[in-house]
Image 1: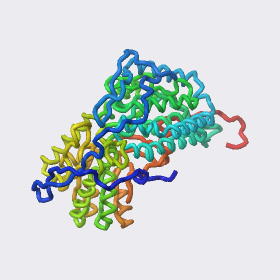
Image 2: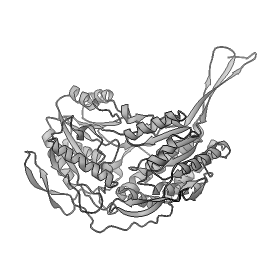
Image 3: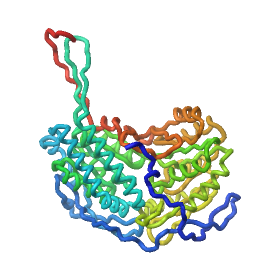
Image 4: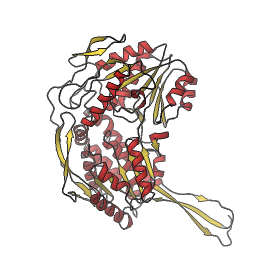
Length: 534
């Protein structure tokens, strides 16, 4: 599969739903009445999928939590309960780790040929493809993302990732190393053991694939903790892995809260490696817990505040559309969102007006309805966080071009929001908002924008929009970010590594680089007696 921009896979509608009058601050600072986006569907669509798996997956069986406790997983469209899910805690993590340890030390998985492991992973990918509609429906119901996005963009990527890592399983090998003296030296690339993995709520199935795929390809066993907001698709995928022939105990899935299950996993003395995707603040805690237990290695994919830089030679219409996608995709709940839109002063006013017009056309509503571009935020906590940042933008004297309010009185829908006249010292330009809030900043020259783009604690991604190859080359090398997209954004592929500089994390997900996260390198030295050559 060729690398692709996510928007190329989505069915997109540029026609706004029935508009409702809202109040927004005009460019001149006065209050103006404008047409805004309204929820496209008043009646909530009932998902055509059953919730069949709500228990913990431990040692090949779905079981209740040790405490018997459950917690509700909610529909972001309404705030109502979808299902009650087993609430794992430290005792359940202990059970899961014990199962994973036994599967690694005594079970067949690490001792299978790499080709056999590959065949199981390929069968799993086929099952994912077969059950795409059910998985996409569960993902949308539990997360709030548009169903078209889950079905036509994300599920194919999940399938592709597992086929990609299945292909790697029998291509992992060490080296023969020349050394001084009569010695045969080889390196072995060995599975690291029991991998603890903690995934986020914004892309539950994709993050499942990013973590589980390389770990299985390398021959490890896993204890995976889901985000408490979105546990449903991981359990369904776990069931399909068992159906594909994965031995019991190789993958264990625990739903629960970070303070209990997450802490227990990160600090567990019998976990050999930890991988975490989430906020930078939580990543710091995870790193400390790992260091203070058994010093297990940790890979972290954390927050971002990615610059999207539009130069004066840009095609403004194309730049507006790409910047819109870079920010508003997935309700703005994307770690690499282009959340600092830097625009050259010569095209700034035109860009702002067209960005506002595009945001006002964005269709927000029930994500199961055809043509919807934006669903609700994940939960009340995230909704309130985004609204606080919007108020902060207004109070900081940024110009609210459009949006800024809740849509409806049910669920967690927020109007697509655009701020202009944003300054680098404003919170909306510094903090990761993780919501549908676009901040547009003005710059004058290349040196200035490079300096300003790099003045952040984050370094996950960046976008550069220009027709000048010299400008593109200069800026991509100067930006301190793990990924730089030139005249595109959110191009993801199984083979393209992803990860951050600075406080956006360490290590890389996807591609060949991700395999090193789940391997140990062992040097083996053997004397040679009377060798024919050395």
